[in-house]
Length: 287
Image (spheres, rainbow, N blue to C red):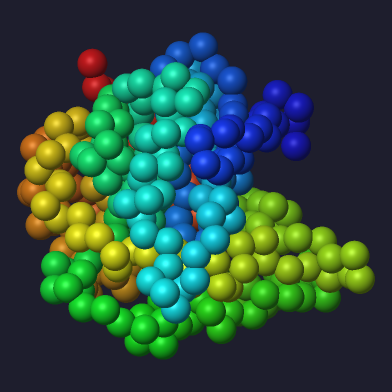
C-alpha cells in the first residue's frame, strides 16, 4: 500500500468508552464514513483514499466499543448514534459530509435527527428502515433473519487461501471487488497465535448489532433531517422485498432516490469506483 494512502489509526475518548477510527488527512471539509453491521472502516479505504486530500476523511469503528448481549436486545442503534455525535463533538467536527452503509446509514440519520449532528449532506447506501410494524415486535435472536445467521457464522479459518475460497463460495461475497475482499481478510480478521484467522467482529457482537437495529423506530425522525439526503438502493438487493426506500426518501425534507444497477445490498463493496463517484458528485454539488 503506497505510504501516501495509508490512514492514521487513532482512538478517541467519547466519555464512557473509546472509539477507534481511521483518519485520512486532507485540506478540505470533513467526510464521515460509517460502515455496515459487522464490517469495518477499512472497507471504505478504496473510496476514502481517493476523497483525500480534497477532503479530510474520518471512518470510525462500531463493533467492540460496548458490551451488549444479543439475547437481551443487543446494542440499540440509538446508542450508537449518540456515540457518533459524542465522537464528532470530541473531535470538534461540525457540518461534516456523511456517508453510511446499511447500519451506518441508519445511524448517521439518527445522529443527525436526534442528537443535532448537523451535516453538509447525507449519502445513505441501503439504509435499514424496516417496516414500522417490525419495531413494535420483540423477537428473539433465532427469529431475526440476520441475527440468527450472524450468531452461527463460521469465524475461524486455517489460512488466507481458505478464507478467500470460503468467502467467494458465499452469495454475500461473490460479487465483491477483489481489493475489498483482500481488505476484509487483512483487517477484518485477527491472526491467532496458534495459527489461522478469526473474525475481528465476533458472531456474538454482530448478532448484538443486528438485534439492536430493532430497538428504535427511525421513521418519525426522517422528516427532522434538514440536510440534503441521497438514498441509494441496489437493484438486486434482497432488502427491496421488505424495505421501501422510495417511501423513506419521500419522508426526508430534501431527499433524492437513486437506483444502482447491477448492485446488491453491499453497493460499496461490489462497486467501489461507482460509489466513490456518487459520493464525490453529491457532496461537491452541495453549496
